Length: 111
Image 1 (cartoon, helix red, strand yellow):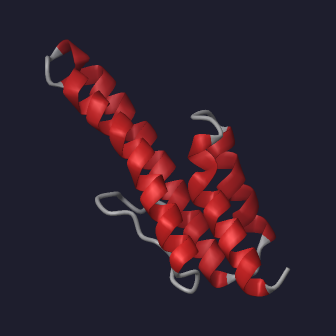
Image 2: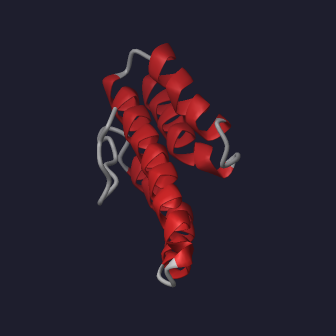
């Protein structure tokens, strides 16, 4: 496997980890890839994936607290849709241009 294929595979795995489960496994895969690889593009994709997962958990906690105020339910639905659509967009972008790391819009970069 050459470097370009490895980069596509690992970057796609980072962004697609959310589809394996919504538990800590989805965060564990990008963390493992972050520590294993030496490729700077894959590291950036792993960090971005981690940031996206962490933001999803933070937003879900906030929106769940807002369920008692009627606006929380539509926000949780929107978050569920975004947690499905945004990784698909990231996978498409990463596989189309593996030399550029994908950046999710509207998230806080904590890692």
